[in-house]
Amino acid sequence: MAIFARTIPTETNRPYQKYREQVRNDFHECCAYCLLSELVSGGRENFELDHFKPKSLPEFNHLVNDFSNLYYACHPCNHLKSNKWPTIALANNGYRFFDPCKEKFSQHFNLLPNGTWQPLTKVAQYTEEQLRLNRKHLCVIRKLLNEIATLRGVNQIDWDTPTKEAVKLILTGDIAR
Image 1 (tube, rainbow, N blue to C red):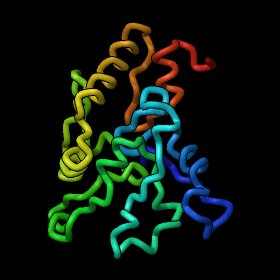
Image 2: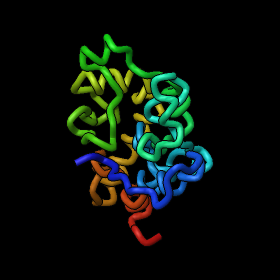
Image 3: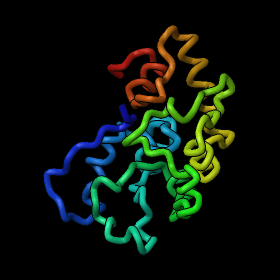
Image 4: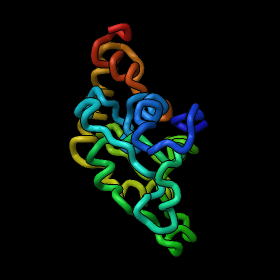
């Protein structure tokens, strides 16, 4: 099962900006790439709509308003991804971006105790390199969340199903807050 299940928009052919709330909900207020929630990633204002297949590339410009091509991303990840897309040669050798709407995190990455995501596949290697998913602050946040979860006696974040509720539970000990 994929990390993020997508809903079907009630209206189609809308300007992509109009889908923001629905995309935000589909991604459980988490970045599609670093998987951190708004709560620990600068809040809602730090998140943007990303075109998974970059709208600025001629082969994908027809997808500019395609709901299924819109992913929720924190500003740093969206900025790093920009209009990057693997060349045909790279893609033919198995290098591409990890797609959290179609794949499980654990098929491609392993979380190490220091908060580093260890790539297990070419897909993970390419994604980690392009988006720098092991930036120091990301590793520190992941490590601290796990340490706090252990101290509180709650489950650590399951990166196959990250949610704002999981982060709230770890940080507050109470999902209702």
